[in-house]
Length: 109
Image 1 (cartoon, rainbow, N blue to C red):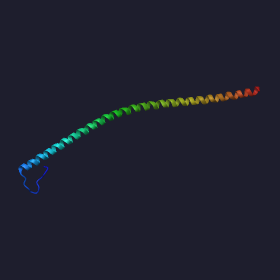
Image 2 (cartoon, helix red, strand yellow):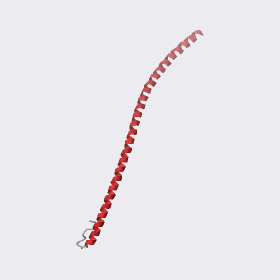
Image 3 (cartoon, rainbow, N blue to C red):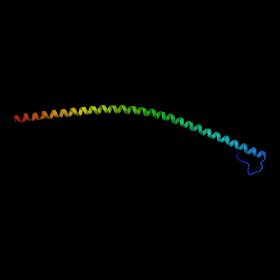
Image 4 (cartoon, rainbow, N blue to C red):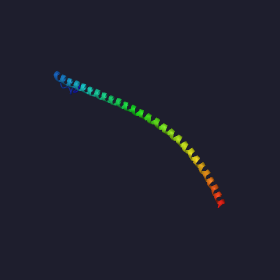
């Protein structure tokens, strides 16, 4: 009870009933408050779960896109490397042609 026996003092039955009723009302009000808070917290948790599901889906999409971009970059890196080797080969051949032209030009002068 809210108020207990205070050192042997006698309370009338009406006063005890009054405090007992008040104690029960307070306990009931507290129980309702706790239930409402638990329900609100459960709703918040469910909403957060839904939002996390959406975020998880978005992360999956971004992961897929980044993997595809990474694959594309690897392919382009190989293509650029091949192109660089072709340019070096072409430059070397062009240098040889220019040397031969210089010799021919020098011989005819």
